[in-house]
Length: 230
Ligand SMILES: Nc1ncnc2c1ncn2[C@@H]1O[C@H](COP(=O)(O)OP(=O)(O)OP(=O)(O)O)[C@@H](O)[C@H]1O
Image (cartoon, rainbow, N blue to C red; front, side, top):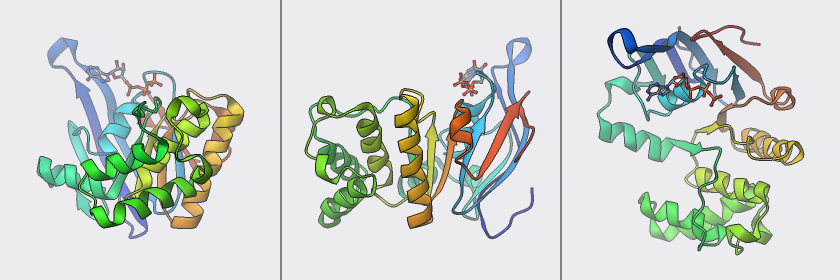
């Protein structure tokens, strides 16, 4: 895959095999993709097609069996574990299907806590947490605890937590799967606003056809490869 300056992340010839010998599973069999900076894209594919595996590779949580991933001009496989952690912590944000909020903390405290444990400068934490919560429309609800928030508000708290350090790339694995379709669309609006207002790039996985109409590109995974970029 050729590298264009406008691409934030480029995957070339990605293979990922789990296990060894006759019991091995070839999940990704040569994935090539280049994601333009400032776009909102989705991976789709049947259950088990490798969407989560690919997200884990792009977020440097996992390493490919073969192939390279270049993020902001740096090849991830050439980095030490510490450097990869640092790239992920400072330049990327991650969101998962389950919101995984700390129940005893308010929305604000959930966001501030993550900034604290990731070493974000103390003097800037309050502003960063508040700004992120306002960006996702939770300004008026930031002092509520998760049990006082709706599912959509909890997911928006998880988004605020993932963007408070201003990452350039947000990766979201099935961020709307636990939500009803109306709430799922609200989350997509939040994503769209983030892309438009801050130039962030968002990569997500989904099964929902309605959501695929909102994104800039859909990449379909089938038989370990990307079939139709549209
Ligand atoms: N660590 C692992 N060890 C062995 N097999 C694995 C491992 N991780 C994933 N797999 C296998 O890889 C395949 C793809 O899994 P993956 O979770 O990436 O699919 P998915 O497209 O995200 O599925 P879903 O839509 O159900 O979340 C599955 O068959 C899974 O069992």
